[in-house]
Length: 550
Image (tube, rainbow, N blue to C red; front, side, top):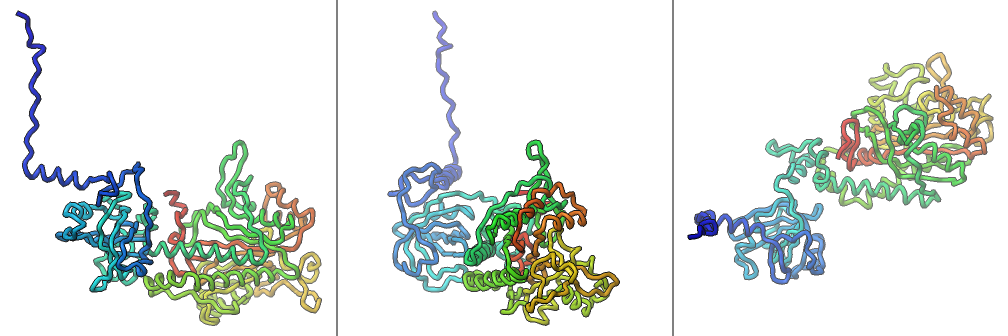
């Protein structure tokens, strides 16, 4: 008899029977993972990433709901807060700073308990589409910005957020609010945690305000200069050798050449003027390899640079820059009024930035005299030739100017020549003034341009200027030397190898109009206008000596 045992099928192993609790858990898991298959019939669920049947919908903004009371509308936003309570689910929808309470009621004919259970399981920061009726609640909702409420009949998750967030947005928002920080029970989110997770941090209410204001600064800057016949230019950031002959540059190999990242568009702005473009400006990145771990220094920031010809005196340029900055300040007050009100509501201890119609202009000597008559008087040297304001002296000067003139914004000009770059035009005395431009008084007589000095040496000044906000420098500028021989002489006096800047020096051999310009740090302007204490707050992805990511 043949052996058929090898062909005999073994009985399938029976699955262990689930307990009632296990069956319920499995059903709950399947419910929480519900995906949308048909928008026309489904009431809730996750929208598959590759879903090709999404209908066209008209979405509204929370801020516009007052005009749609009693109507059914679609909204898209993030899950800001979530609370399940019996047959109800309260979901706070967020669109930037706008908050709306959405109510999902399982007792409603349109909804089910499964819908409430699913919605209650959504993770914070998930992106959802909600559909429902706009109503005005009987009692005002204090925790939202909208006075309306949405009675939800459909809710779909477009993008699911991880339930394990690095920090909760409400905690970060509380950290930005001075009044909330007075409560010891409030959870604080430190700066490094926020910057390490910057994409999440940018969702915080105050950050939305900061970067809208930063955008307005650029818009107002460009708007003003274009109205004054400036041309916007774009200069290279990859340079041979070292930018401006300085040492604080990021160096690297450019194929087989030594190169660096531009620490200023200075040389190229001047070349544009020599190309008869007359007035130019640029908004672009600036790189500084300075190992400065301070509240106001970045290794990469946005520079607002300009350069222009002038006819009689470099103060024409100073006056135009002054007018431009006041245009920016006035524009911010008008165009960002709501954002500024919100910012100062969160930061009541910060005083609003103040400027006056006639900006105070102090010579370097006048500013030094102000400091001499203050508590730091002994620290100001008699010989100013090698002196420049320290950070502490600048802050004190800002305080003294505020007390004397009632403004946070002022100008200091005619710095000592030794404190400025090699291309800065010196202030010549009577014997040398024929070699410069714009040195005469209004009556045509020669002006004595060298200053007096408490020390034994004559004070050698320059045609330069700095602009200040709240006692900190935001802008540095000067008239440039536009004679190649004089420029080469000054470069050598400053210890520079002229061969490394030969292309720049030689440009002035072919004739150049007298010109001046400036460089402004965008982040510093925003930081000081708002009165913030750290420039990293106003840099979207800050780069300092210790941070190169994200």
